[in-house]
Image (cartoon, rainbow, N blue to C red; front, side, top):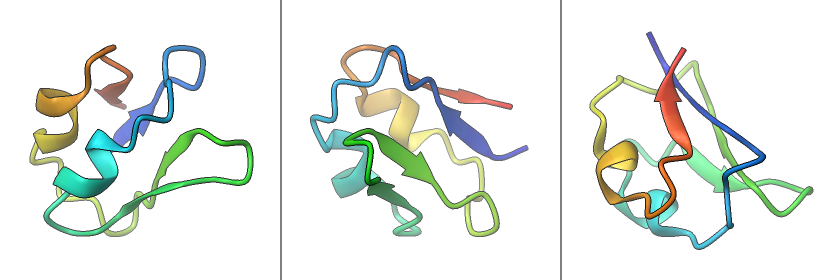
Amino acid sequence: MAYKIDKEKCIACGACVEACPMGCIAIGSDGKAEVNQDICISCGTCAAVCPVEAPAEE
């Protein structure tokens, strides 16, 4: 299952964007991280680097 970002927790620090090996995370128009779930391989790298535990498996 792909990861999803909890928008209420996300502080838009960009740590997940830089760490994602697939390049499937970007900061969206709302200023929060977004995961392209068609590309996400559920590796958990984003969750490992997030300081506020915003990414979680769906």
